[in-house]
Image 1 (tube, rainbow, N blue to C red):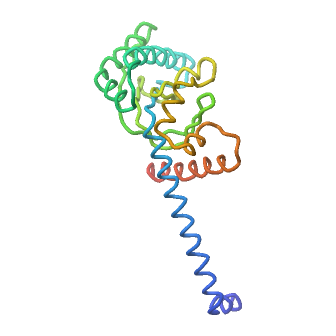
Image 2: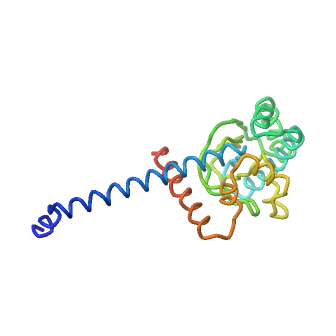
Image 3: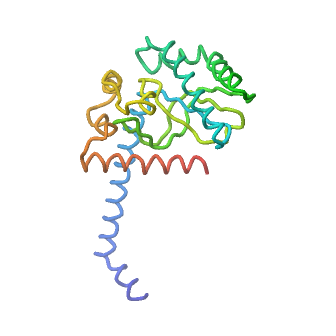
Length: 221
């Protein structure tokens, strides 16, 4: 132990340790700044949907998907002319009570009596893949629908640009939706979410996930 301390206390060793520490600090700050900028741009380009089932029973999970389908059908009808995320959010806010009624009608029509709460806000999301588009974990603006006690598994998708249907059909994101996202993202940012087969892009995506997951965990604690 004394030998180790004597080595560390040598001026040249102390200087080397200081340089390494400053280098590590610089790299960490650069990485955090990069992740913060990219994740903010990605989050600012989409408006998401979050449906939470009453429980994990098969009946409640099946009901969740029925609610999802009817809510998406309604959303696609009222938002088909939306040209931006902000416009889609405003439309959703104006029809928030109608969203709740669509969910309630679906629930009652299928023999259940659960209540429903609908809110629009900024919520944490895990990493999610929609066809050939992947969104890293982080905080996103979303329409959240809670069914009953909302203790069951979640279902996520993107309402604007419309990526929701890919989970239940072809698994391919339409070119029109990609073009909308490209308008709000840099080439590198779009490459990050479009599952590009590149070790460099893959590393950066994992870097974003690491920092965003740490941020979410810290916020919850």
